[in-house]
Length: 389
Image (cartoon, rainbow, N blue to C red; front, side, top):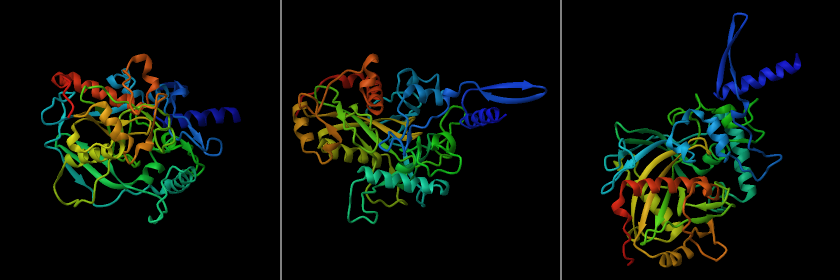
């Protein structure tokens, strides 16, 4: 009997994760059972046993089994772990899909209150932030109240394509550490009976991510760009595995990071240009380029499966500079430490994305390449190299 009860508890726990199910009936009693327990979310890190993580699931086969409701999407077919894709249309460029959001018409709406960690996750939040600090993944800042850098970010609460609005809410980097980045971590401080956030606090709904509007996670907006030189060579970089997020290492998109805005009047009228400016700040910090050095095109907003729905805006940037000139700029960029040089001491690589090489890339880098390729397919006239200045 004890063995049966343990088995029943396991089935019920898997049911809560909304995985593949089978309805059965016995002696007039009907119920629903999970048919494949391997589809349920799994613990990725137990802090007592794996203190250095990773703290969220990277394995795509497991992720697509957990989020089986996206089985027919092109992203799944192309091993791009991003879903709920909203294509973006900018001036002078075609969008990658017909139902695109026109960024010229898009307005940003800001909630007046800040995001707050759910009370049930407060102990988990303190544990994870303390752990990240001990690992050295939070930059020290003696002038900050916490003693470390805790930048402001913007939580994406809703995308309304009909009204052409994005609803945002102020959040902090530590909010992301406490939710999206540690979504598959057994911290020992989660609510009673819970092993991980993805498994027990915010599981999939019918094999799909909960909506942005109902999610309890920080879901802070990120930006990523594939940058091309004047000869239209894609500039891949080797991601350092010592970063707080995307710790898998490998070939990465040219630039990526948190979308940060300067101090703004939230009651004023703001358009999509604020997000483009956030991308420009990352390009300046990681690549050393000024806005006049490139043409920037927003391509898509998508939600990431590894970090349980964290939204990312993907861009293409076509530089006016040669690769050699960009090597010089990147060598002195403020945040150059996020990347490492290859065996020949180069900052950039021009690897081609092929089906049998996708595991050489970070999942975010592979996705950025996917959306960039779609952009050039939609805009073949942009595929003509230009002269560097």
